[in-house]
Structure formats: structure tokens, C-alpha cells
Length: 76
Image (cartoon, rainbow, N blue to C red; front, side, top):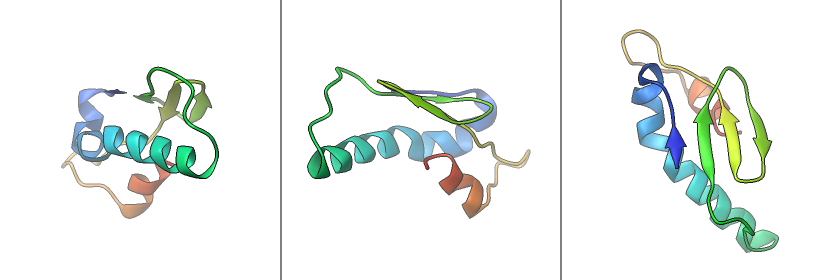
């Protein structure tokens, strides 16, 4: 699941849920199966991870564009 403000919509709608699902699958393949029932990505002022939730940061410019560094910083 992904939660984000309307200001983050142009960036998060394309990548957020897909990035969370990919990360869970990849880490599960290389370590151990994801042990929690859900995963949530929340757009916030800065990043932090806890079980089942990750706070991501990054916003688009007012015209809806974003740089590659903003795009990749959201999911690191």
C-alpha cells in the first residue's frame, strides 16, 4: 500500500507500490520470506523504516517534473 499527498502524486503513483512489491520480493529471494502481512510506503519529510512501513521522501516540481536523483532517493 502507498500513501502520499497530492503534491507527490506524479512521482509516487508510478513507482511507490511497485517499488515496495519489488523490494519485498527481492529481499525475500536473497534472505528470508517477508514475515509481515502488509507493507506500506508513506510519503514523508524524510526517510525511515520500521516493520511493515517505510517513510519515503521526495516531491515533484510544481510543474510535475522530477529529477532522476529525486526519483531514486525516494526508494533507497
